[in-house]
Length: 121
Image (tube, rainbow, N blue to C red; front, side, top):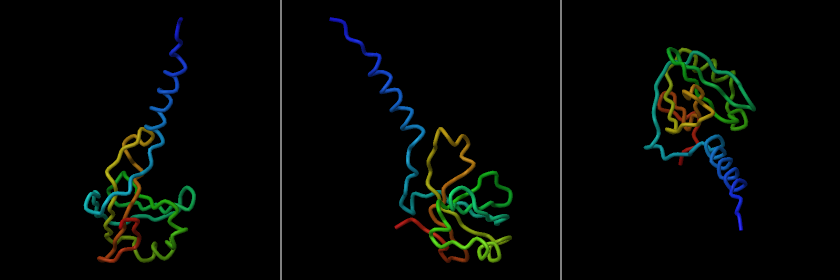
């Protein structure tokens, strides 16, 4: 009796690629987050209600997933934060679909020791 392993091999390979491409963004503990401080050069909406923060002298941009649905007001933040320093805390993760991680999920955003957004406990 001859066993054909090819369909099983294809399923295993597809599951492996699925895990590499479709991993959820982790929600870390605050003490496990990476921290960046920078001067805001731009805030705009991108994607589906995402709020994007661009910092001066940074290639990376940081986003709050569905930020406008969480009550973030882009116009108000532009008036308050452009050319001001903010603190962004974000998880240390890597996705195959984001080579170089130029668009990074922000877990917490602070300005003048005030929390503007957080998804951390």
